Length: 224
Image 1: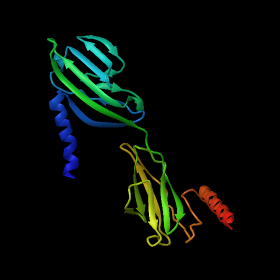
Image 2: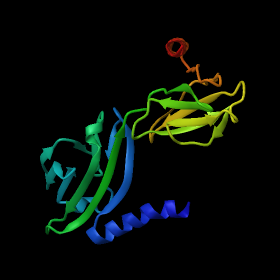
Image 3: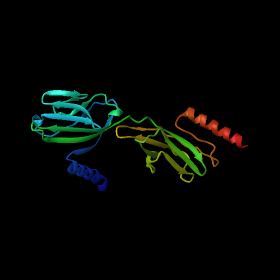
Image 4: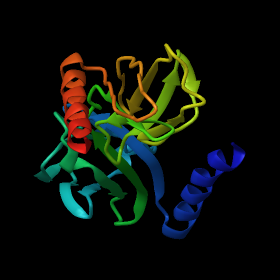
């Protein structure tokens, strides 16, 4: 736990002392949100030149009282304002301020991570030899999955959870929860019903359960 907490701090300190910039951890926001990228610092009145860049491309430039470039608005604290933010606005934001002598007096870097809220997942159950495979869908690279068995957190953080026949009892109910940094949703409970031959599968949706049963029946008939 201590290592998990101190590693990001050490990285920030190294970056701050080697580059002169403070790099913040990611600011997570949902698509459509209003985002304020803070500039901070003291003696704002001493700022005679202010620059903001996004992924090294300049998006705001003010020299004295004259604003020469303003793709985004800036508030009274020189913080950058993004309205109705979209995923393509994720990335590195760098704010730099100079005094009247042209000396650097403040520099800061923020990482913005814009995410879509997760969709409601469902659990697909597929009977296999000596057990059952539970698959939580949909998933993407930004999502984290957790599993519940009979209302109690189960082991497993992968999209597919295997439950052996010896562990599976009649009436057992399973559900998965999908989350990212800005949202979380859970699937409806499913109650797997499997025979030793693995000829039956069920999922949270009754219509899709019936369709899978038909597929399994056709497979059985094809083997006969």
